[in-house]
Image (cartoon, rainbow, N blue to C red):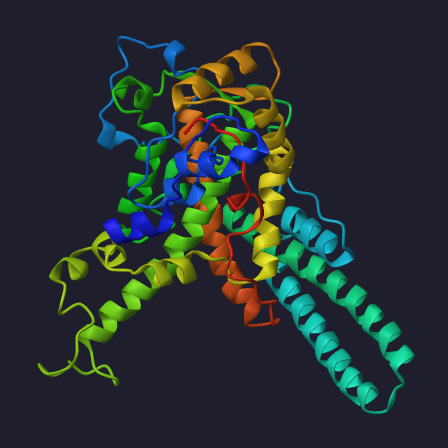
Length: 429
C-alpha cells in the first residue's frame, strides 16, 4: 500500500511571505501549501477530508450506526421521477439532442441510434484523413494552412459531438440502474436529494473486490475520525462549494481508476489460473501473483504492488473525450472549480498552518464570502457514491465508444482542476 500512497499523494509545506531577495531562504524553509491533493485523497492511503463546520454537527442520540454499515440500502426507488431527466450537463449537437429525446421517450432505441451516429462520425473522420493525405501531396503552402484550419474546426466539432454522446451513454447507464443523477448544486444552501436504493450505486456496479475499496474510499471521506455518529445519517455539515466539487471530481477519478485496475486484476488472475486455451495451467507456468501471495488475496493487495510509473499510467484518463465528459459533469454540478478555488484562496489569504486555514474557511463560509452547501451525511454519502459510479461507468462507456469511433488519446497528466501544478496558498486538508 505504501507504494501507491506515496506515488499518488502530493506533499505540501508552508512558509511565510518574503521579499523577492529572500526567495532562496524561503524555499529552504518551505513553500506555501498547494490546494489539497486529489490524488492523495483518492489513493488507498488517503487522509480524511476535514470539512469546515464539523464542530457544529448535529447528533441524534437514537441514531448510532456502525461504520461498517456506512453503505446502507434505502427501502426502495419509488422516488424516481416519472419522466427521466438526464444529468445536469446540457448537450447542444443535433446528434446528442436526438439521443437525449430517445433516452426520455423511447429508451429502447437509444443504444442503436448512438452507435449509428458514432459509426457515421468515424466514416467522416476517415474520409477527411484520406482527403488530407491527397491534398498535402500537391497543394501549396497557403492552401495547406487554410485546409488545416478547416480540419481543426471539424475535428473539434466532432470531438464535442462524441463527448456529448459519451456523456449521454453514461447517463443512460444510470437510467438503467434506476438511479437519477443529482441535480445542479451551483445555488448552494441546503441540499436534499431524497432517498434511493443505494444498491444501484454499489453492488449492481462493482465486483466484490472493487466494492470493498469503494467502501474504504467512502469511509475515508465521510467517516470523520472520532465522529461515528456522522456516519449514522443524522449529521449535517456545511462545506465550501469548492470542497464539495473537489470531492466529487476526485471520487469520479477514483472510480475511473478503480475500474481499470479491477479489469486488469481479474484478467491477470484468470491468466494465472488457466492456460492459453482455457485448460488448467501447468505447475511451471509463471503466475503473476506467485511472488506476492497477498496480491492474490485481494484487489487492494494487488494495487499495493504497483510502482509509481504504473500508478501514473493507470490513473490517467485515456481519452480527451472522456476527460471532457467528466469535466462537464463536475462543472454542471458545482460550477467552474478553478474560479471557485481562486475565490476560496483569496478569502483565506496567507495562512501558516492547516488549523488557521480551517478557522478562516469557517469564517468565510459564515460571512458568505464563498459559496457553500449544508448537507447531511446520507446525502454526502450518495454524492460520493454517485461520483465513483460515474467514473466507473464512464470507463465502461469509453471502451464501447472507442470500439466504434477512434477517440482522441489524452496526455498522461491529471486533467484540468485535478492537477496541482501551480503554487497556491494553503487550503484545509
